[in-house]
Length: 150
Image (cartoon, rainbow, N blue to C red; front, side):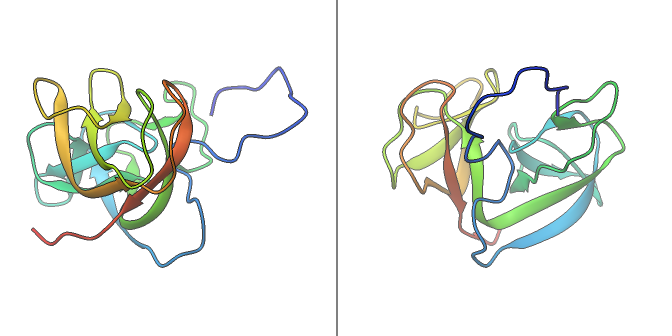
């Protein structure tokens, strides 16, 4: 997390990668083979690793952790242990307005969730849907992951 120097009267409901409630969830640990932002979907990278989702097999999203390093605020660096959720409800960052219940894809160029069609830097995330609506770009909303076996 970035160093906070300004304080608002009300805290936000959550931040990307933070668990949104206490519903059943499942997580596993992988080793980052590249920098992975909190709340970003990840793919398998070798036997025990993970990397940001591109064209590989979606295995879950990077659960946020209150770990501050000098180089990787709000993300995991290469060789960090990454908690990966493959089901549950987590906060995410929207790239545009999103309707509750909409199927979600990942825009890797902007690092945000989207309902735009899969093309270019936008990748499919099987089993991901908007649990709540997002009002627009940079809005925090809830992402529901439903386990989809590969």
